Structures are given as structure tokens and as C-alpha cells.
Amino acid sequence: MLASLFLQLTALLGPAPELGVGPDPVYAQKIQDAASLPGMNQEALQALRPQDLAQEAALIHLLRHGSAARVRLAAILAAGREGSHPLSAAALQAACQVQDTGAALAALLAPRSVRPEDLPALAYLALDSSKALELRAAAIGRLLENDCPNAWPMARSILRTGTSLDEDAPWADWRRSGRYELPKRLLLISVDAWFQNHDLAAAAYEPNASWARQAEQLKELEPKVQQARSRSRWLDSTLQRSAHHRGCDLLLQWAQQGDLRAQRALSFLYPLGRNELELALRQGSADARRAAQRIIEILPQ
Image 1: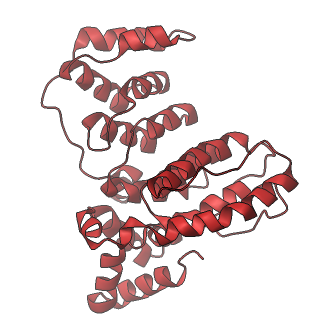
Image 2: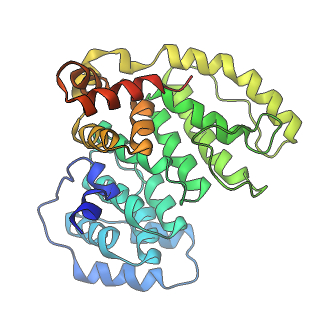
């Protein structure tokens, strides 16, 4: 029981900031009623956006405890905040724990940005073979947005899926359904954001093109990816120090217990987790040293 709680994905998230006020019950009921409707137009959604802290607190409560429909609507209404905002933290918590793919995807995409301390959870989520490919694509994309260039090989595997370049990479364990446009489009939004962060033009990639044309586009894309990788801001030691390491610490603990998914997640996050790996190599137990060495060995190429 305790082990299963420990291994919860949400344990890898950073501490959740609190608003310090209680939820507005009238507003919460309004959201619950709206969530049961078959659809809402943009005007109706705009009218439901929170106007004060108590209404934001109501959305946080729904993100943490609501049904899939309520989580989805709350995530839409919470969208656009920076990663440090309590609504963004609650949205990522929902993305990690809700089972409905649509609700989880809405929650994962809601924050405008993601805090470094939340990236370990997203790396682990991206490697969850039980999750839908669109959710995994969005998770790996958020790593790229946050300058984790070692996430690119998995992103590339998703873009290769269905083409002649489709590969049997260790992380490419998703079902080959023949329908990949949505995962690829979601991923490309993040790839473009990654490029924009480094003053590079958007990716010229159409995921609805023929398989042959997609393979050509990927080859054309690679030089730009290498430019973005070479400009990664994780090379800045100030940013490395700003990252919260609790999630990396947990991943390293799981990795030394033989969790291959945790090992791979850390390799995606490197050098976010570099401090932990180097410390384990210098001062860790024999198991910790072996795990750290294994993670460094499997760094994506």
C-alpha cells in the first residue's frame, strides 16, 4: 500500500502553491452544472472564467477532486497561467492522476509554462506505455519547451511513426494504430515553441502529408533541431541551480531499484538531473553508482 502511494506520478511534481482562500461554492456549482452540458461556445466559456481568488480556488478543488468532465472544463478555464501559478500546479496534478485522456490532455496543456520542478513527472508520464500517444506526445513536448534537448529522440520517434523511418526504440512502445495526426500536431506545437525560444523558424512539417513526405520533412528538420540542442539554456549553471531536485531524487531512487522507466526519464532530463547523477557516482551506494552510470550510458543520441 505504502509502496504504491510512493510510486504515484504526482510524487514527482514540485510542491503545490496555495492561494490561501477557500473555494467559492456558488461558482463551483456553476462549473459543475456547465460541465454536464454537451458543449459550450467561446462566449459562454469566457463568461465562466474566474474573476477572483475564491473562484480560482474552486477551480483548483475541481481539478483535484472533480469528475473527468469537470476536470476538463476547469482546465480550460484555468488555461494560460504561468507554471508557478497555483492553477497551473493543480492542472499538472490532474494531468498526472486523471484516467480520462481528454481531461488529462486539457490539464497538461493548460499552463502557459511548466516549472523545472515539475519536469520529472512529465518525463515519467511520457514514458507510460499505458497512456494514449497524444498524451505522451504532449508530455514530451513540454520537456522540449523547457529546454530538455535529450527529449528530442522520443519526440522524433513519434514523428517517425507510420513512416519508413519508424523505429523500434526502447521508448517507442505505443500501439501502431495508423492514426497519428493528433499526437504529431500536439508535439509540433511544442517543437515550434522550442525553436522560437532559440530564435529559430517554425518546423516545416505537415503531419497529414504522405508517409514518404513526412520522412523527407524529418530529415530536413534535423539540422534545426541540432541548432536548438546546441543552444540549450540548461548549459547555464544558474538555471540548473534553480531547478527543484526532489523529483530527480525520487527518480534516482527508483532507478537504483531497477525501474528502467525512471532511468530513461532521468536520461531525458539530463542535465536537469546532472547534479544528482554526479553526486551518486561520487558518494552513492554501489546500487546508486550502478544506476547513475546506467542512466548516463543510455542518454539518447
